Length: 280
Image (cartoon, rainbow, N blue to C red; front, side):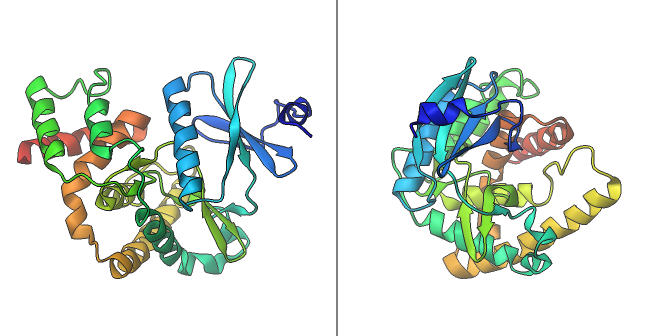
């Protein structure tokens, strides 16, 4: 069937999966539709199309992109359907995965980071442009912003592929086969920028809004354990270290605050950015 015929069969009132920026629908015949919410910027969607194609062509993911569509004023991507469930949900089926999740993440990271894609946007440029979001970074003075930009540009340029949202929800598990999905945030640059982001995501990012304190406390413990295993294995595989990544922390903070601006994280990130700029 053509893409148009597949789309006509979809019940758009019942997505198979919902995320912060989109809903996902199964189209059949090995395809899914990622339908963005209307407030998602066209530039972000265009970038995900490019990022997904690059990730597929370089062997970072088997998720092929079959083009974009527009449905009821909302843009969407038709993608290859990958089998399996997210690593976040895997413990319900296989609790033992928690003991090897860190090594799996490290292996996937090392594979992505060894690929290069000069056509992707420089992570340093993205951070500098993100600082221009006045409504988000109004807590910084003009002088502080200029100081941060100068520091960011002093960091070395690189063409390694970075995912920049590398958490268990974005890893699909199918038996012993693990695949990285959701390339909207992908950039190019030094892999240590990704390590810095991983550190934040696994220690301080918001966890399951609305969940009980007991569940959140448990998940904080789990993700901390996963990170410890991840960084141990990643350092061994690549020779890059967590200690080296701290010079890139500011990029992680800026991108996380500027791109997501989550209520729970805002005050902490503002404090971290302010502290960092004072120490530069």
